Amino acid sequence: MARSNRPQVAAKTYYRPIEAAIRWCDLLRFEERILSKLAGRALPDPGEFHRWPMLRLNTERILDALSHRELTGYRPGAPHTEERLAPDDPSTVVRHVELRAWMTHHYPGERPAFLFGESECLQPPALSVDSLAFLLAEREAARGRLTELQQTHTALMAEHTALLEARQREPEKQAREPGPRAESTYLNIIGALLSLLLGKSPGGAPYSSFRNMDSVISALLAHHEHLPGISERTLWSKLAQARRHLQGMG
Image (tube, rainbow, N blue to C red; front, side):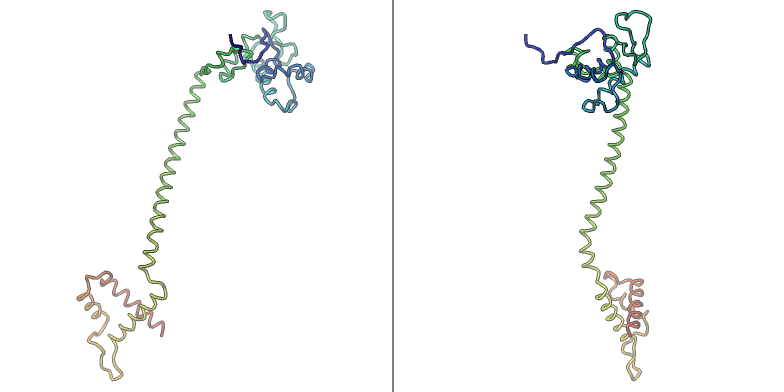
């Protein structure tokens, strides 16, 4: 038969809280050193064993269970008496079977070798109703967060696509729209032509048959209304703008 790879766990019928915590932390090989340094104290001081921070925590868990009667403390040699000892009494011990049952219920994810056999450690821990409810609540919360992230991602992708399309249209827009200097040139030309159409020679003779802007706009509409930008409203706006621009340049 092949030998087990699991360590020697020194299981006992009863344990002092610190002895159980040492085994829980898999520190059995350091047990003599730890107990010697504690010199009878039930609980290590904070930071006393900085290499093994779980030692104090697991000891506190067992002492807390004793304080809240989740575990029963006994006096060695007289476990079946009615006497119940204080959790921090150096002589207080807890029974192996009770410690195992307590850990199964309160710490189902823990399988220290001194309490559970090798086959039990390979089995997934049983979930309590409270643990299952907690996991279901966590799953629903995670699902809600995932939905929010997906919605945010969709919105960001839509915004990104819109920005790319706007960036692609920008050169076309710039090519279509004249710059300030070109627009000033166009307004000068339009304003000068309008002044010529509506103006008179030094002798008082009209340069054209057009008498006012209304007649100019009517003629433009009659001949070129099918072209983009040739509408009555646009023509009035642009011709008036060109006239003001030319006057401002004078």
